[in-house]
Image (cartoon, rainbow, N blue to C red; front, side, top):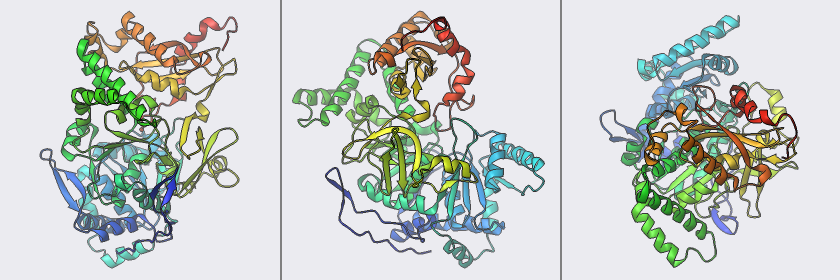
Length: 628
């Protein structure tokens, strides 16, 4: 399959006085995911497109674009050989891996619709996805996951007399071999004809929102949206995404739109893609050597907190915290007209020798950038990482925008913002402060859900994001918080919980925070302890070993949390400050249903599960009103 290169007319695009890229190209009906991959193969067929981790030792095997394309074609032929028709849906339930990317591309090459399923999804959730998307085939990581899918399919079949059949294959039972065998009689001409029949307006994937409330909605993403945004995207930040030496190591779930789009960006560019498991991430980072990494804020917080905890106590801890303050001060000074002073430069150089190099080394020998998304990072961490030599390009997006709505630029990075709209998107602020988006990156609609579509789009077709924010004079966006999460106290004060939660999570002892107080006389918080950080913190403070339950009411632990709350409160007014908190003895996890797979807190579910703790906070105030 060959492809032509689109022409891009016009002079360089200028953002805030800076020329950043050529004008974007508007996709036509030929712009599909197979077209995107074919363009990569045509540009440099023998250049490495993916490095696959060897099962024997920590070595990486290069795979050329041509070889990858041939393997994609074999698997795509297998889907045809199984009798799957254009537009039918195939589910993928596996961890981030080479096989995931291979299957994703093959599903698209065969004109089918990919439907990611999280490995943590329950049988009930899978049953809903089977029904709503009309899955015809599900490919799982293992026979154990296949059994969960079988239970879901059986429940679906029992509940529906007209239920369609669903085949199940598992990778640990030779699913790829079975597909290759099934496609042996399918000619390349037949496959190419199938691929040629795909149009940009066809659905490429349906991603079910993990959601913090309610039944997941199926987000329909067209080939035009994903391929078009990726083709333009690598040219939007070319020095990060389009160079031959660009290297990306994926470890976040490919079932989530954030990692999924970065996968597509990697294939659209000229660099190399790799896959890792979080359990082996640190050695993989060193061996693979990515030039940029993608991370959610919680991962970046963990790295900072781990470095703080490992510094121990005494002189080493003082050196680390001095270095952290130096990094933040240095980064802030970069944003001033005069820049860092000579004295600050000298301090920064010393801090680099003593601390920064060690932390940078954790991300591998080539890391220069980190793309942060999936939640608010906060200025503190943004300045810390830039100050130690890693440029954090914080972005913002939703499943409905296949990841990025906006992202900071390498040539202009405003810490504390999520950058300008990415190529092909436009963002505006509604009368009540909600961000609304239109353009290339916006999904076509929710699958089989006209009511949700009517609610989610304005009369003139802009998507209501549900996020509150502002746009500065240069076009850079700042997020205040989720519209549904804004807290209104009994005194009528509007409080965005994200600022307080970000500050409080910066303490090594703290894992998760949920700020509460809607309709109440004051703001409070539910706090969980980080069981990984706790042992080192206890050692650093000369305390005996104890578990999370014991630590949750230990006087010195509570005193440390009191100080952390006081520091967090400095960022807000008194009416917005945390007046009380409760330490919970269990953390929020995917397993207990309090975190989404992208590590967002399910706020409503936390409030339901821990209603007694919230009630206890406010019990003493029920007798009479207090100021808020």
